[in-house]
Image 1 (cartoon, helix red, strand yellow):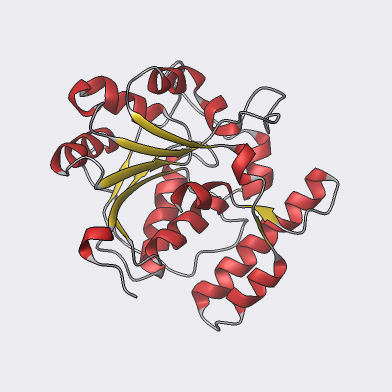
Image 2 (image 1 turned 180 degrees about the vertical axis):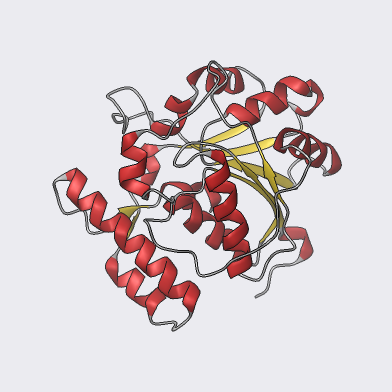
Length: 259
């Protein structure tokens, strides 16, 4: 049964495009009940420009260059710069996609409009509940949008990947990576009355993508399938190496927020 217009949710993905961000993007593009209206780039798994370049090339790979990409804020709200944490580079590779080349090139550039203004305009444009903003990295850009336009606070629907409630963090006993990038911005977002759904580590560590799954991607025989399989195999390999135990696959952090 195909999705009707009434059931299609408009989505803005706010990505720091590493491996699980790529899987989240792929999932949304392949979902008949989702309409991706734009990607806003942030920092985290990679620096902003690398993430935006990944977004543009991934959209070219999928033949979806109609979807605009916007640049967000490129550093935490309490600092003037950002460098990729060593753990992020280990888990996502230097290029964010497991050091696997995205099989597409593009001359397209990011929009001249900022991520902050795009989010504000989109939230104002659509009725409440029709649009979801899905941040999968630091909340710097989201906090800036809510502060610049207080009128959107009670209109926006945020479904975010970040945080943890019932288990330790992944960058320390009390810290999850996305929140840890800019905890002050996260605090400002959570202190508002915005409609926020938090998909934290308590949820995302319960779902795994296995090598059986990546073989199914590879078996499609497409360049996109091979890319996703090679990229995710890197993620599975490094997850097993760094965790010290065999998990059976890699965690699906960002795709679960997208789902």
